[in-house]
Image 1 (tube, helix red, strand yellow):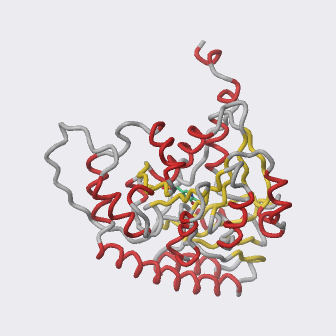
Image 2 (image 1 turned 180 degrees about the vertical axis):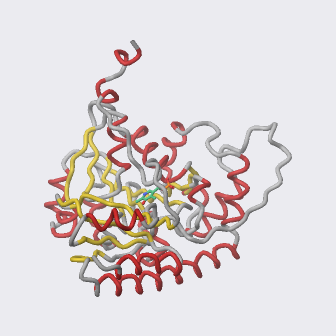
Image 3 (image 1 turned 180 degrees about the horizontal axis):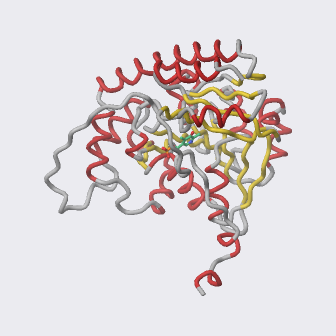
Length: 349
Ligand SMILES: *Cc1c(COP(=O)(O)O)cnc(C)c1O
């Protein structure tokens, strides 16, 4: 009986398969772009009988300083994923409005749109890269939200900030340009945050899940001007961030913790360079997409090689890209973890 109550768009949903939803067994986890660095965190909380601050001031202040914005331009969310969903809930009318995405890209834009019955105008990364701004705005049409994942997961490619600015200008009266900067710490000079000075239709998504090594915390941020954040503030749950999460996020954004994060990013970037060399020299690899971000995506000569790695306990993320199912994304782990990848590449047959 309950199923007959389901709206059509919900009934036709396929369960989203995230890197973590499948029950895999392994010992080297390189499939979810997590950081290999984990810190042990101790918190002592005495006021859990009270509701938390809706937007914890200490965290907002620390993040705004880190992002070089004013506190009013920062909204804390349960991961960047909640930011994506909130933007759609706030700006899109179900069964009427459209978002635009450039595939292959991060899967949650589609999941959020599908669950909210929002249509998707699927454009390609090639179009984003090649098309002139006038042509791009025609392709984008009447989409209300335009998602640019920068650097793009899973291809690693970057859209220059100038291009984002030109697009924001062209769409000034018709759409929000949402720049997903989940991996921006790996290429900080490419951030679109400075565009908030000139544009009310630019939104930047951020997370503590990747470079900050806190995927388990579920913390992200929406960065935008009042024109965007004021309406979102009316839609977001009244107490989205628990007291415990706020305490930990505050510690993670201390000056020392940010210095440590930057050191870890340098280590991961050099691990990535090493992995890239191994991959380009391997006969098992036919193509490497190595861009910015804590991952490398490659095409294998033979898809069964993935099972071989899985059997050895090295878990990486298979993808179907550009119509072919022999792609693999490897998250940049510790040197020790990447040694497992090297062993696999060197394994005969
Ligand atoms: C990992 C990732 C996110 C999700 O971030 P959370 O803060 O963990 O929800 C968002 N966007 C992209 C492109 C990602 O790769």
